[in-house]
Length: 309
Image (cartoon, rainbow, N blue to C red; front, top):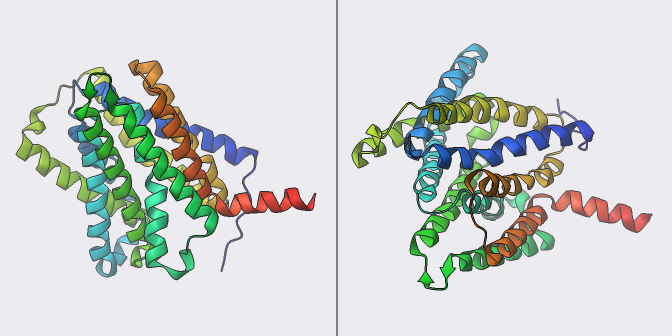
């Protein structure tokens, strides 16, 4: 039985506003707590807390019965998910949270490209190709922000590059989920795969790199891990999936472009991060590109309404 999803209303906009604030604050919290707990250990702790809660829900709902038919895709999705947070953790040591927020949320661009190649029903339309062009032009422009008067800020450029790689890994994760048996699996099972593989992988990397001992249980550090594990990974994701069951995904995707805006704002206000003119222009182009790619159907409907009126 198909479920009819409605267009986003005022309530959906309010919930999306809260979710975008939460998601935009995430990178800032990681960087703020980095002196106390290594970012890679924060990501591992976050995954562990969320995996425990999601695992209980998975057993309660009986979704674990589908493990035998989905474990291969689950391991792949989980590995890509872990790569995303590895790139975020390493990138935040080199670049600003504001930069990471923008580059990470290029993920919809890479998702659209991957689905265009993988699924015939997800072919890109001209407006979406324009969005991809604008997004990559924005990335190139924002990268120029890593150039200073005295030369190239190599650390920032590497950190920004890791942010783009994190966006690519996130996009690839979505493609794997959409193009595999995970698309028919319970949401809790898909999320559990990602959280558990991420937890194991990041702990192993942290142990090999010596970062596993970089843990000081300060209020800021503990607060950051709890915020990411309980608020971001559990509460916000459950709210997001609840919205997706009731509203058109294309409508919600347009609203989600607010996330990097909040990320940049929190980075400037809470961490006193500077913004170059090139980065601001590049970020605007990236956000415009993401909006065109993710909200193409919603934009076309609005344009048709304006023409008819």
